Amino acid sequence: MQTSENNFYDKCYKVISLIPLGKVATYSAIAEALNSKAYRAVGNAMAKNPHLISVPCHRVIKSNGLIGGYALGSSKKINLLRKEGLFIKHGKVVDFKKNIHIF
DNA sequence: CCGGTGACTAGTC
DNA sequence: GGACTAGCCACCG
Image (cartoon, rainbow, N blue to C red; front, side, top):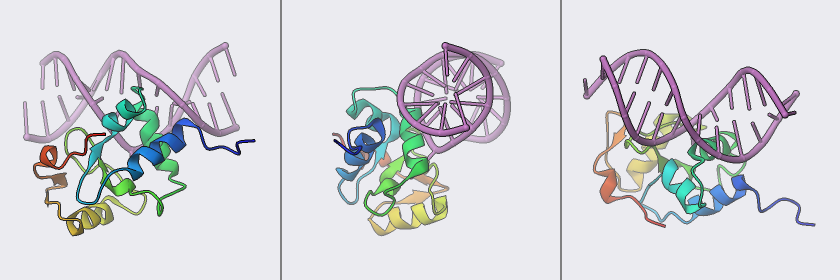
């Protein structure tokens, strides 16, 4: 019985886990990868973040390049992204378009 | 079924 | 470029 591993949420986590280190993706991009436009639902999946450790949700940012939010605090998210080689300025990723991961 | 909610987005002023 | 509004989809009670 398929406990539950084919939901919209789990799909989000799966796609996000595909993001390589040093790269980022937008909520809309993830929704597109799921063949949907539910970028809001993607954010909901992160908000529940049952896989905060297993999934690099910190690599997910807004389409605007803003950091967005994080379960441990946006500051922690910025710190992690910086350690991955990304540049953050004023809460936004610098040249994030060059580090966007395309699925 | 319906209303409220959210780690969003695009458009307008 | 900052602030506000409306539209958007999935989940929960």
